[in-house]
Amino acid sequence: MRFHTFLLKYGEIGIKGKNRHLFEDALVRQVRYALKDVDGEFQVYKSQARIYVDCEGEYDYDDTVEHLKKVFGLVGICPVVRMEDQGFEQLKKDVVAYMDEMYEDKNFTFKVESRRAKKSYPKNSMEISRDLGEAILYAFPEIRVDVHHPDVMVNIEVRNEIYVYSQIIPGAGGMPVGTNGRAMLLLSGGIDSPVAGYMISKRGVGIEATYFHAPPYTSERAKQKVVDLAKKVAKYSGPIKLHVVNFTDIQLYIYDQCPHDELTIIMRRYMMRIAEHFAREDGCLGLITGESIGQVASQTMQSLAATNDVCTMPVYRPLIGFDKQEIVEVSEKIDTYETSIQPFEDCCTIFVAKHPVTKPNIDVIRRSEEKLAEKIDDLMKEAIDTVEIIEVK
Ligand code: ATP
Ligand code: MG
Image (cartoon, rainbow, N blue to C red; front, side):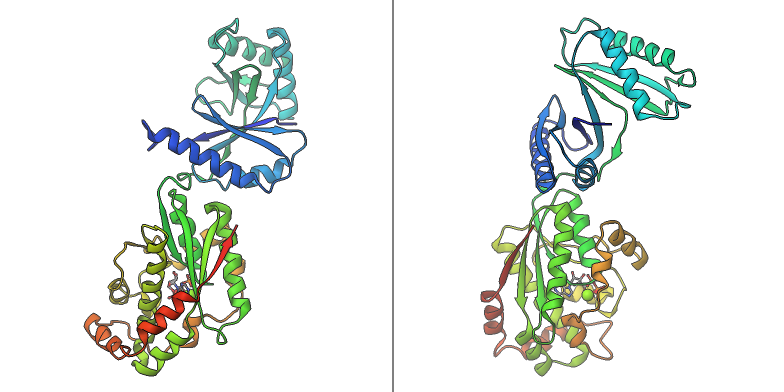
């Protein structure tokens, strides 16, 4: 079947009043972004509370659908056949031919639902539905009508042309990116943080990211892995401005000055401070991490409190109540899992203590950090000044 257009359905929640056009405009923008690398020419526009994608000429159907399924805010993707208006008798034939081609086996129930956007059309929507339903029934002996719970809803929209669709491919849900501000993701090479970024982005939030590496203790390949993960998340969230921070000197200094069982917590606190600096610079409204209560020593309630202590922005931790297996399932769904499990060293694992504190006391941690007074400001400034920015698309 050759489809000429996609009709994109979005949820109604949160788009009342003047929010509606912001929501729709963001959706149009995200749909255009999603299709920019797909083979084909696409016209994306809104009309009468719907969003349409017209496909001009040849295009890659499967790839188009695959990309549309990653646009947050869409709840359904309907491939449409457009038929020229050549009178109702011809329409009946065309719709019967559509049903024949779409459904090899006709042993199911159906209902026709019509919408007359072009008010000058000679039949009203009730008559269109009734007469087309009759034509379909007449053409295929096995098919049955069920007006309450049909297996297949055949939708007819009368515009300048007649739009026919009966398939709804589930969309990604959520809200269009760009309708809820921006936040800074602390992105490591692990399983959790890409999933955390995906989940916050799903609520309409644009994403930036910060990655801390520690060359030569961590390799170029570990960094490339993070860039690859950012690319996968960007398929949903749109472009990600990735800040790559050289954390080596700060880590070595902490290692020299502070008790080793507190290393991870203190390192985490400096990560949060630096990420927050970039977040503020770029107008982000919060930080995002992949933490989940109790997953490791640095994620006990006490550790999370100690990490949180240095942040003035809200820290969003969408995985906070997730078990590892649940996180893995999402990472498989969004195709980050295979990349995340590539075995490259992480800057935290290299300097990690054998027996890290699991119940850090914030006052004790603050006092330990006083031992860094001599150089830490300069080292922070150096790390911030030498940041490498990668625009991930
Ligand atoms: P992940 O799978 O996301 O790495 P994890 O289970 O390995 O998580 P931790 O290493 O304790 O957990 O990290 C907790 C959170 O801190 C991460 O989810 C991430 O948001 C942030 N983080 C950790 N290491 C880094 C890093 N090198 N660069 C940026 N953020 C980091
Ligand atoms: Mg990690």
